[in-house]
Amino acid sequence: MLAKPLVEKLEQIAGKENVLTSKISLEIYAYDASPFTGNPGAVVFPTTTEMVAEIVKLAKENNVPLMARGAGSCLSGGAVAPGGGIVLSLTKMNKILEIDPLSRVAVVQPGVTNKMVQEACAPYGLMFAPDPASQNIATIGGNIAENSGGMRGVKYGTTKDHILGLEVVLSSGDVITTGGINSQIEPEIDLTYYFCGSEGTLGIITKAWLALSPINSKVKTMTAVFDSIEKAGACVAEIIAKGIGPTTMEILDNTCIKAVDDYLQLGLPRDAAAFLLIEIDGFQSDVKIMLEGIIKAFENNKALEYKIAQNEKERQDLWKARRSVNGALGKLKPAYFTHDIVVPRDRLADMLGKVAELAQKYDIIIANVAHAGDGNLHPAFYYDHRIPEEVEKVEIAADELIRETIAQGGTISGEHGIGIEKLKYMTWAFSKPTLQMMQDVKNAFDPRAIMNPGKLLPQVGDE
Ligand SMILES: Cc1cc2nc3c(=O)[nH]c(=O)nc-3n(C[C@H](O)[C@H](O)[C@H](O)COP(=O)(O)OP(=O)(O)OC[C@H]3O[C@@H](n4cnc5c(N)ncnc54)[C@H](O)[C@@H]3O)c2cc1C
Image 1 (cartoon, rainbow, N blue to C red):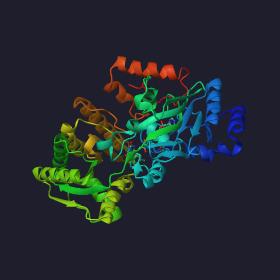
Image 2: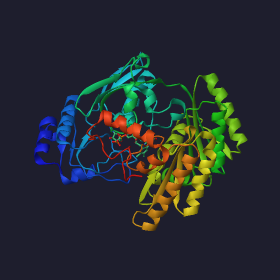
Image 3: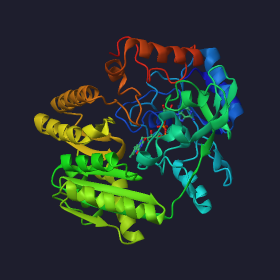
Image 4: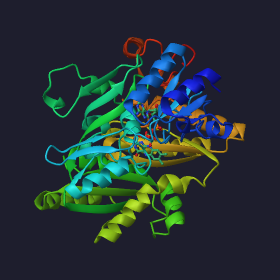
């Protein structure tokens, strides 16, 4: 709980109706989608950039931690406030300010959801390429702060590749604008990049200029089934190596296939070791060539069967299966956390095999759904948090997987962020001078360390 005079000041700035301090409200905002919990002192819903700036100044003057929050779908503990302080929910700043179809730019407030942007752009034949599986709820502010990826990452990259500019409230309370509609040709130091993936530790994003991409009308969606997850991984690696440019390549392992089929009854191949979902788009002639190359890769890697969606309903069923994985897995155990490792794609098959091997070695459930096209695996560890031996086993297996990832030349997070969860892994993955450089950047933007403290950058004791 915050001191009463501070709460009154917040109410003066944002209006009483935009400040929550009741026990039940604070409890609700103590969670995100990770196993970590926080202890917020107040939750404030600013509606303008000026309000955000005033709140930041108040936090600075009183040395109170401040955490920006979107939908709270963060999987790494980035959106909980264990050190207390003010939770700044941007969800009431949720307007699409402008769509310029000729320049292919959308200007949006941070609390607008990814899905709202997609729906607003679609009538112009445009899309915002980043499409995290959480797009129905996740906000653009959260997408930028986490540098989110998604199903189309293999073709379009991650969020940072589609941000032209930002309006940001700094920890001083000053408001800056970085980049903008002409950012690709401006000769400045690119401040926009600093905020993409900074997990709310450098400033509060209050407006964003999004680069939009055309929606290709010719789309083909297909699946292939394999009797080993390594073969599915090898198939993905072959498609990449051949230079075929699919939009999506997602792998579901057997645990995911069964869970989704139980949930949706789509008639998925329940006995298969792996299910590969691929989508391609482009001009008709390109799609034809890509399809031929992909079918060859299915055959080379001994797919048990493959299927091309024949109509929009079949295509939507396949996407429904993919998008339902996380929800469907929920009933396996009372608790879970998910890793978000990335490996070079020629190591994908080995790494998928390693995950299965660890599940067997420690006799635990690890469900694996992967943005395989960009080498991004999501091994999710399911366990009962009330049984200490189970907790211990998943923690040991999770650490072993990270060590193997680093040994394979991979990285510890592709899109879910470091948050609290991966703090200790930062010291495994980065050298001391590299971490110090990151800390120097943090100090320059946030000298009082009030912006989302305890996240992203390890401190003494986190190793
Ligand atoms: C079922 C499920 C599926 C998911 N699938 C994907 C996926 O495919 N790809 C992917 O990348 N992620 C995925 N995620 C993770 C998560 O949805 C993303 O990280 C998302 O971008 C977070 O958005 P949010 O609005 O929920 O942000 P929050 O969780 O509220 O916040 C996340 C971080 O961003 C910061 N932040 C939020 N808003 C601002 C702002 N305006 N200014 C500065 N900092 C801010 C917060 O301080 C916090 O550190 C998934 C999560 C779930 C639960």
